[in-house]
Length: 454
Image 1 (spheres, rainbow, N blue to C red):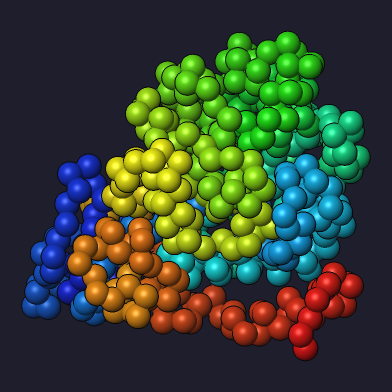
Image 2: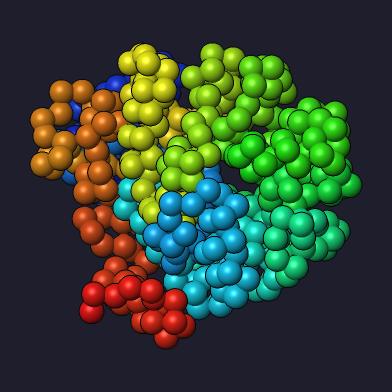
């Protein structure tokens, strides 16, 4: 008799493996945080499970991977609206970011993570740059871990940028940033539930020596790295003015473009740059909502796919998206590229779901442990209930996921074999309504609430 910690029965299983295997009426067995069985229905007479979930009528698939978020921005939804990126930064994000308190960071992180879990996200990548207070990073990590989400904490740096209104308190020597990254890497963690990354923040806040120093550190210590790249035209304008070349060319000259690098946004890539990123094995985090909200443009993702680049999805911070809902980002991705390419085949539903699962896992260097439901991989699983008014009827599960789904369809979210969200309840013990009241109270107390109907 097989022994499991958790068994999911009667599910239609979208494994998202390389063969696109679908099991119409199957079971998933979980042991010690990993998938130890996936296949046709397990007989009750041949297994024992500490916990059992009957997933009759539901779809089981890998949890979504959100490869780019700024948690503190969850308290800034709607502020700085209808402005381009630089104006948006200066009017809302920077003024709050430089004075965010520990309590505000905690609340914002909890809001971001719980919303993510409700939308089927099991791996969350926090791109952190409010480094004026080192303890803010600890608060953010502790809050992420509290919710049970798999956490990637990207502690970035800015060593330049006064002329671009980068706050003085953000600017630091790259050596100090590396010391902080090393400190954070010592935080105890088990089962790959926390990973620490680093990297530059933005082009206009990084010196050439900063790029070189952080690259040397990352390659030597095997630390993966990320940065905002070609989000707006300012990236290349600044780089040409200071270095006489575009940012992608500069990064390639110093060896920065590697398969350890996750490039975020990539809105303004040329065909030559796309081919270069593909050649170097760089992955991309596509953040369509933020790019549209700030008027930055639409990244040439179909061309990136054609060149062989691995592409993942990110919601970006809620100040430039107004949500951290992965299903919302998936639907937007599925639609906008059809329109901009004038081609309904430019982006398929299957490709979008793969970007949100295996694409994200590969972008994080975790393709062997996440992104598909296969024996030996981490048990990061979501149960999708199609019988909601928005998604009924379901003729095809993949197209329903891409075009008709919302957070109400997510019945259960499982991370590392643990049920962290089920039927509206978070296992961490946080009550959603109480958290909402705490957020509103904090914003009113700090004078940040600009409009209230109460």
